[in-house]
View 1: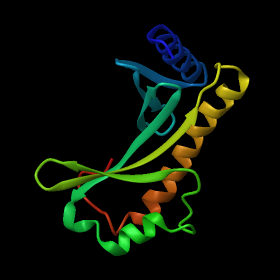
View 2 (view 1 turned 180 degrees about the vertical axis):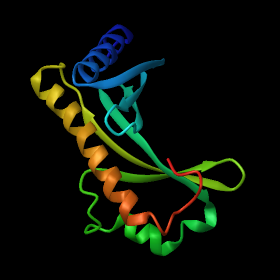
View 3 (view 1 turned 90 degrees about the vertical axis):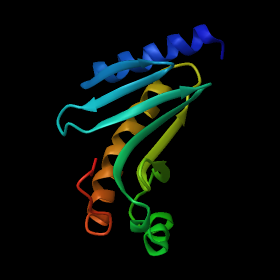
View 4 (view 1 turned 180 degrees about the horizontal axis):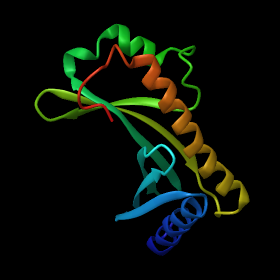
Length: 145
């Protein structure tokens, strides 16, 4: 996609989410901060080419808290996290940020793309709630997202 198309598409994503009750802020560089107003949960939406990535922070914990047992549970097919995937990012002072991520490929911002975007956002929120229940005790930290 050309830069003009990317800008128009992220603008269309912004408008779509806002029209469906999300509080949306443009952070620039094809990145949006989105807040689900009922729960207050914020997540980021980033457009790279024609792929829209949605990311929500689950928690930030000391590296030692993410044990092999927890990683196996994150990767398990039967963990109840049906549409999103976990990612770990290095954070400051020996900590790891644990995120949930989802994505969809945009074609032309028609009704199918719009349904995909809204579904991804909805699934991300559902997976976040389940992940918080699943890992609440195992990844408890005062810095929970």
